[in-house]
Each structure stands twice: as structure tokens, then as C-alpha cells.
Image (tube, rainbow over all chains, first blue to last red; front, side, top):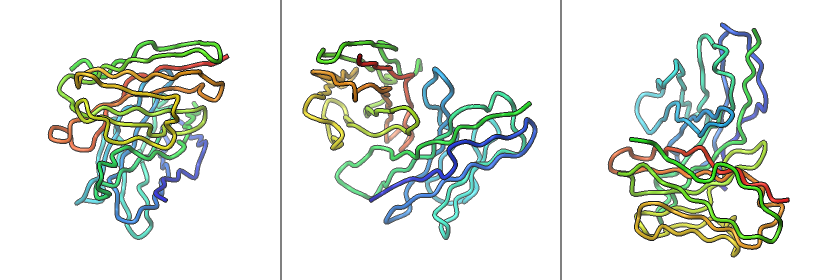
Length: 117
Length: 115
């Protein structure tokens, strides 16, 4: 079955420190990959996406992610976090080659990011 | 572009009652998706429409759930005979494969509490 795994339920980082959130996927073929952020009372906002090509993708708010096929990973990084980055982060995937119109995103369970002052 | 809107934002209902939620997608988007998110979990796909056609339904969508998109614009999600297990955040998203590819834009959600 297709799945997305985020191994870390909670991560605490000091403000100004670097951040890496892990995401692993299990798909027959390389899926399209996304990172979304969800703040309390807000909808999901797309941070960045990977379809093909350059394995290091840049997103909004200073985030970047690196796709590693050999590790089936798509980890999210930020060199220096701000208190406003505290939120829930979701990795998601879709298999564009599944046919039959299978279009729904498969999400991981999320990582709750806490920023320490 | 006013974004995806959902109404109501919160709904409290008693077990056994029917509820209906509305989603208005970004106006030029032809695809509309419904997801359900329970506490501590990521969103789970329920169903999606291309224009007015419902093209896929997850096995999570029991017979008590029905979704419509009658004119290919807004969509409604109805839950009949609600159960406590239906308590969740219901998220709507829209996209347009030709314009934005596989990106989906999400609304703020409707939080349902079944008492």
C-alpha cells in the first residue's frame, strides 16, 4: 500500500537554530511530493513541491527540501527557525502514474514543531 | 483569487442528526477534493470531483456520506445519521491540472463535533 511516514511526532528547536523534518514514502514509483504547514485555525498551506528534476527544491518562508530516491525520503529543512514557524507540518504524496484518476493526496501523520525562545 | 472557502467553520450536532457542509473552490479550478482530519492525524482523502463528475471515492466514505458538485462550482458534503466517530475536521481543496498541476489549495476546514 502507498504510504507516507513522518517518524517524528514532535520536534523542539530553539529559535535561530536549524531544522530538519523527516519524511519517507513507500510507493511503487516515485510519487510527486509536497510539504504543507498547518497553523491553528488555518488551512493547509503549501510550502514546496517536488515533481522531477533538481532534487533540492526551494519553497516559501525560507524552507527547502531534498529528495533522495535511494532513501525514499523528502526531508524539509530550514537554516534558522523563527517563533512564527511553530505549527504542524505535513508531508504528502500523490502517484501521478496510478491511472484511473486516483488523485487524492496521501498525507503523513504530521510533525508538531515547537520553537523554544 | 479569494481562496477556498468553507461553511460553516464549526458545527456541533447530536448523534443521529444530518449535517451538510459547503465548499467554494477557487473559481477557475475544475477539481475539488474532500478530506477528513482527525486529531493527531494527517488529512485522509475522501472523494474528488472533476467539474461535476465524482471520479473517486475512498473506502472511508461510508454510505452515510454523500457529496455533490451540481454545477461544477461549489460542493456539498452531507453526513446522515451522524456518529461520534464522525467528529473531525473536514477539509476541502481545489486544483486545476492545466493551471497548477498537482498542487491542491486547501480551505480552512469545517470542524464537526458530534455529541
